[in-house]
Amino acid sequence: MIETSDFKKGVCLVFRDAPMIIVDVTFSTPTARGSNTIAKTKMRNLVSGQLINESIRSGEKFGEVDLERHNSSYLYNDGSRWYFMDDETYEQFDLGADDLGESVGFIVDGIEGIQAMLIDGVVVSIQLPMTVELEVVETEPAIKGATAQAQLKSATTQTGMVVQVPSYLALGERIKVDTRDGHFVERSKS
Image (cartoon, rainbow, N blue to C red; front, side, top):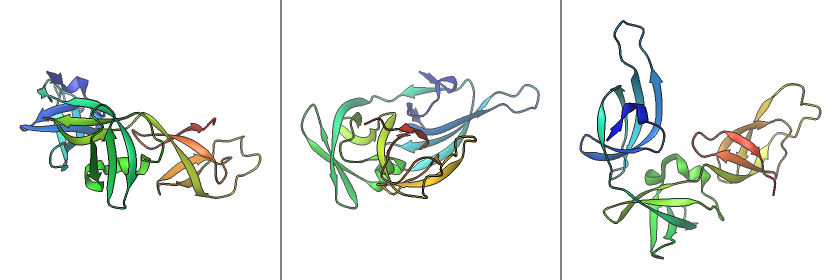
């Protein structure tokens, strides 16, 4: 059983008789006496792809989803579908932008650590690694001597995703981005 205290991004549970994955969660404690902590969640239905927002009181329990995870490789996209291969069975599968959601901005050639999530042998979603390496294709010029204060500027990556980066980064550099919330982690060392 999964309790609301176990909620975090990526947890799969059965909610209203449907398999769900938590996309985002925040906890709040109302100031009224005797109030329980409330988990404000954004969940994606793993079968239909529908996003729902739900506030759940602490102490509630939910069933676990019978979910298999298989290591997978990204192959290519044709503009509307992204194609992957299951590394265990070598079967290919594809997912659309609606199935992938915000993950689309992180999928690039050479990405490693993708896991396909299967329910009853059918791929319903993918899980990305914690960080991915992306190339900066558009940004303002680097500001010299900008190390006294932490200043951020917008940078567009090769996937079209916009990330706030330190002002010293220049065009063409590779950066690591956190796939959970899309923030800049570090300049890539390779």
